[in-house]
Length: 591
Image 1 (cartoon, one colour):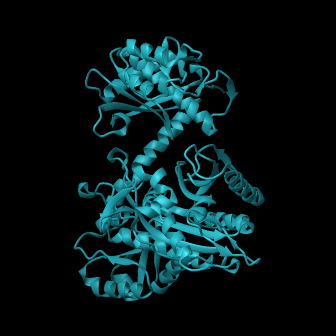
Image 2 (image 1 turned 90 degrees about the vertical axis):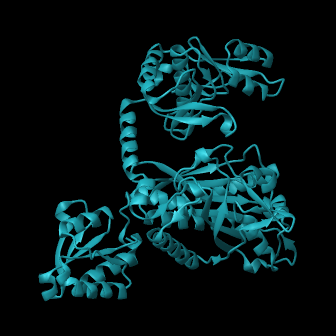
Image 3 (image 1 turned 30 degrees about the vertical axis):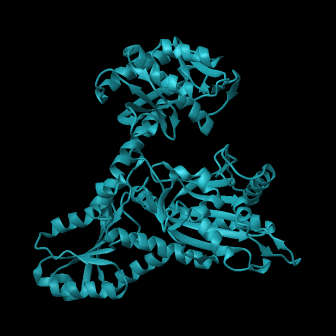
């Protein structure tokens, strides 16, 4: 399909490309706005961007709006699509653009225009009689949008300002083929059933409270899960030659000024005052890691130096952006900072890529990689950026791993590789990242003594594998639908005595399992066996051990597995030591 650029040129792109999706969904948002204006002319239009999955548009309606209006708007959108409007792009100077929107009573557009430079030519995209202030790009014709659905309605503050006007946000999705829409809606229904907020509560993993919005509480089973994940992380990092450190949660403002975060990341940071000095609660661990590096002299023989940290970080998020464990204000990040010579860059990047692959494969994730390049808001010389970007490209090319380019989305201090996981229902999540940084070592005047006896500046890799531990747990809950693999299950076995007569033997079974290091619970309630089995299934416990007269006499247990296939659920009667051996082998294999 063709996209129409701001300069009037067209470019051939595929919907599969990020650029293609963005243009497709951006045009869909304009069609939504045109439909709303056709139906409800008094409505004021705010903004309507493409987002990660679909699009939205914010409106100020002159009447109470609800989801019951969505089918009417969809019908009007279909009419617009059928008219096959070719999109046109043109420019106005600031004064004409302002007059144009003022005549139409579009107060939100006027505010956007006022924020633009006085001498800037302002671009508009037009389809039929509808013209929209917009920088583009868009697809060339509305007829390319073959399938769409308006999904939901929510409130949204104008420009995210909680003191501003509350607008109505309409979310939607669109595709070039009907079958893609059907697949997406099926995925959304599956996602609803797997919602980590619902399952997390039902399985006793975490809870959310108004008293700490954005600050999740982990419950006992959640802590078992989290610690299993972190223990596995630590084992891997020891094998890969990392040393674990811990840096303070609060550090003096001067440190963040040196690092550049105060200038480039200040709006995302919480601050406080200690002894009349301004401190920041760390949003990331790299400046602290830099202080650890600088705490003693280093030789080229010490490099690469790999420092890993499970750092608790805090970042400001607006209340409307919070979402379970996926978007929080405090989380544990599995940071590592690698200090190295220029000659070691490619080897170290490749080692990290292999580590990330090992972790994601263990959980059954496939992934793709994006190379994010220099953003507008950046520090450092053009030469450093080119060198860092080339190093990432060379490392990936040497590994023969495909990647795509994400222009302008690097960190402010360096380019990065972003790893996007695909879960069991086809959604993607950005988790791992490898950032190559020439700037922070310069700003902190980090040094090492080279083989030539001279002082040199190390180069730094920032990397995470899981990203936010809390978010990764949320992803795992939805990926597995709460049915964690045996090694990761908070409770691996539920012992179900048929009646009180067999409690003594059931207690011995529990003791044997605990002694072997297996996580076990017993349902000792005076309930029917069928009820206990259903409860254990709802708790998604991998194995249920039924203990009755036969099992007590034979000194065995009857095993029922969690497997959804009924013909695989009943594993029959077996000696207890056989089940112990099975579970221990699954723990060892991490399966």
